Image (cartoon, rainbow, N blue to C red; front, side):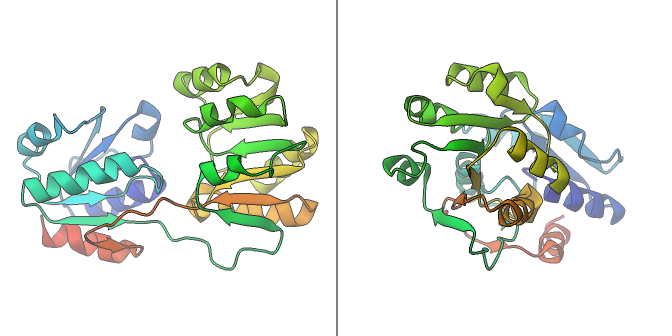
Length: 249
């Protein structure tokens, strides 16, 4: 399993309960803490690239690949799809459910960060970016046209990226989600936020809470749509993902 998300941890726990051996790859020690301790589970913290994945699959005697990565981890998903095809392994993408019926308070669900930055959505606004650390360099040129704040994970990489993208220490907050509604609300008020940008990451990513708080405070919300990937097989049903693992154990 390629994991690092809450859903992958839930899947791993259920597989352990069914006494199914599972190897999970994550990229950080913080993600490792999501998973249970079990003789049926091995969690490897490492960056696996296209040149190493073949050796990894052989060493771990992998019989199938369950892709339970974050909805925006496109490069990892594409690598997993290619590896499954090359090594003739069954592949299934578990995609966390998207939120339906976005409230009227959301300005838009834009297709990409490029679309966001090509418009005047941010101009003159006090903007809270809850989009992770990787897109922050895209906003470098906007510091003179808007007041930008970033909420990121508490990691060295995240903080270094935010500072390198021009965010000063008084405009950065590090916190690990989920962020409860009361804290979300107070943060927006404290920073006098007038616009929030998030990813369409679903309930597991706290998107529903952001919609609720935006509606309560009357603050516009922009959601960046998930990248579209042509997955060979895909489900948003945990039971289907578990059945896939059972069938290929």
